[in-house]
Length: 534
Image (tube, rainbow, N blue to C red; front, side, top):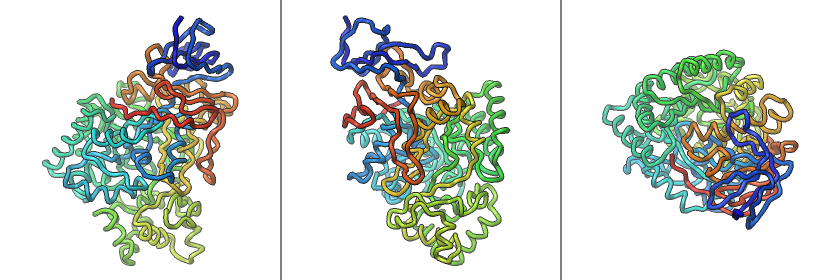
């Protein structure tokens, strides 16, 4: 008789594959961090047995799009709820370094300057590292409950070689960027990411990104992009991404695909057929999506790109200058070629403060509301807050419509990512605590938009295959023992925009590397997570 460390009996196994038999009754044994599938009720013993009758056992969820690079490296208890949020919703692996922003790599002479600015994006003193190996060592030194890996951020690469300057890279600078990227990917980073609406990534032309994506292609790793525009020029921006993939040979993954802003609502009716046609023609292209009609980013991203040239100190100096603010106001009103212009596509009434560490009284209020209260122009309110916070302000942007979200969720090549921005304090977007239960509760059970098996596949097997996470994302003999056990009848998100870290309902257990890290919805304190290489 086989003996296991942990045995799950009586559950409905939804195995993370897309096959016709993706769900079936089976028991699961775990030993040495690996899985063994067993016939229901078959002979086996274990140090601990869980009766999961009536529950679903799925592979641990893989969050393909996070900004959690440094949250566990921040000292103190301030970030404890933030750290726990993904684990409590069943996420056993987080993929960070998205949207062109990672904590590595950089030339040694640029590290000090980059460390000074890292807190603007990560909400604390998280450091900056020469390469993926150093990043992995820093995370390995701090025990964590779930696994982490990271993409290589193009914006970080650019800043790490050139600094935050608005110009084309010289041949030598591009060669240096390609060398840093090559070393990071060889060390196990998961791919290349861009954030082409964010500085300094937005300063780069297509050819620069093609050269870097070609490095990713040589490693067989994807080019992952926050498009240059997700609003009125979203189709043009998608075509740029397609060109980059075609010219470089890299697989293409479109981050948090959306058509946002009033001028782009409904355009998923054109972007999704375009992606489907590319796939039918042989291009390897996928995307991810979060199940909300609001996004979240830095307040500074609401300003024209030229405002941020030179970094945070240069930005705050411009914001303190009335003449420069007038130029920014004009840019928002009239637009700037190649700039997404979120406020111009929506309005300050759709931009609310998520986190302003030293001005918590502003959190939850829109810029428009603050402007009325203070009797000021909205841009002057935003400028004053950015100066007072030295750029460290995150916002929530209510910019999408539900029909577009549903269309992307239903696309057969989309997977699930929270796009969580886990800064300690404030009112973060509820997606960091609610994304996966929201899909399973609202979109699967309540709306029937997806089958249970399809939704689990998007959260597990499809994600693992895209990012080279071998032996993960599926329940099969010998696979890694990362699992989530949930009640399909009650699973639901609890997080709201008002109370964004409320844990979900219906998560009974979360298992990482064969250890129970969540039991009956409560963390156990076990920290078996590791930094994954691909």
